[in-house]
Amino acid sequence: MKVLLKKAVTLSCVVCLTGALAACGSDKSTSSTPSASAPEASQSATPAAPAKISMFVSNNAQQIPGGKSMDLATVKYLAQKTNTDLDITFLPHENYMDQLKLKFASGDIPNVHMVWGIETSDLVINGLAMDLKPYIDKYGPNLKKNIPQSAWDAVTLNGKILAIPQPAQGNAPSERVIYVRKDWMDKLGIQTPKTTAEFLDMLRAFRDKDPNGNGKKDEIPFSSREKFEWADNIFGMYGVNLDSNTLYNNEVMPGYVSPNMKKALGTLKTMYAEKLIDAEFLTNTRAIWDQKIKSDLVGSWDHVVFGIWDPWQKELSKLLPDKKPNVVAIPTPKGEGYDGQVGRVEKPVLKTFVVSKDTKNPEAIVKMFDWLVSDEGQMFTELGIEGESYTKEGSTIKYNADKDADVKWRSAVFQMHGFNEAAQKVLINNDEAYNKLLDTIATSRKEGITNPTAGMPPSETLTKNADLGYKGSFQEAAAKIILGEKPLDYFDEYVASWKKQGGDKAIKELTDWYNANRKK
Image (cartoon, rainbow, N blue to C red; front, side):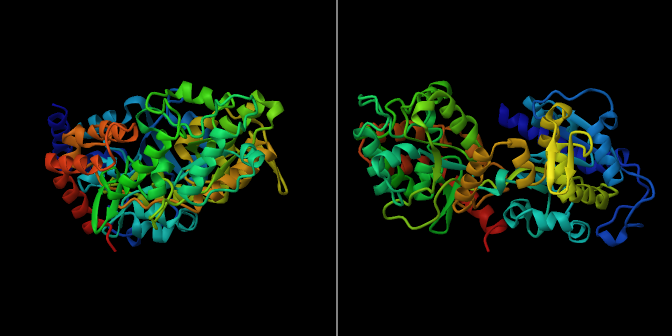
């Protein structure tokens, strides 16, 4: 039923968008400049009157004052700086994509809409998104300077740039790292492991040598969460992740059926047999996992780059002041017999802004986003309005959080850069935390697994049959192997069965799309 409904909505979108997009687009943009296929058709580089731009964005689960968007101080300031008149509709985050589809199906189409990757935009899927490349080339010097190529690649199909992307947080696309209690390592004289074998030796030392010093053999060398959550970099030692695809022998396939997944499961099987991984790794809830780490029991775990200080170092220092805990990120060790990329699959973009192809003033939209990634625009999205919530005296920046009520939703909606060191240093306001964050970002930037299908709409075959996904039959097969109920070779039986049930067709879909859109 869901598939039929999705097809019906998509079909209605296509019918409405194809037949009425020009009228809908013109309703949303009152500029008299005729539609153009290239920037040269613009009548003036700087319009005399503010350019009217309509936008649909998620409220990112933040409380945003009602009324006209131009009545909001943050929006008004942005409009003044970019010579625009912004009509922004903030849609509820919890059902944003559903509401977006319904609005598009009814013909309510703004000039710009926010999504998370072009693969989720109906306008992109239906060929109704504007190619922004010529406008970015002419009007986007800051965009080209400050957004890395990996982010542009993720929003480019057949040479057309179909959205303006925000790069990964911290400009660290691999986004997740292995955290280790460095104080435990130092106490036991352990060097940073570079291979899976050395990583397992470190975990064995955590298990046997009482690094928490309580006289009990209660240490948990590595902990993760239910449904194989937060074990990304263990799988990543062999270049695979559960929630992404991988290129193997010129075929694109889900990571969980790649031959390299068998090697990763072999490592996890060893970890479980030797009590190097949390015995409750299949059932740990977030709260239980969190409590174990903060109770001085866990030596290593996986989490996001920006978690280094809050919650980990900050909370552990508060809860264990006498232990002087020291949390650090280590590079993902390389799996035995594997010589490829390691870490977490790269997520090169956070959010993206897609422009309707019938928008009358695309140059004004590009100029607005170009300002947002300029030095001045970056400080605005992170710290607010200069002279109100922050001031600059030479190289010194002073920030007053009490006067910046819009900080959360402003950054969530308008921030288009990945990392601004000066702004982050002011916001964190703690040298130890700031330096730890920089070190963690540096570690993350040195690794990452390329996503061969970045920007691809969901596979029809995998969407129709949920059991073919990693949350389907893989979970049971992997658990049986790791727990010792089945031999490692059982993985080959699982993959053979998966392929017969539709997996072969899914691999063909993924590979065909890759060859048509990403293969170089």
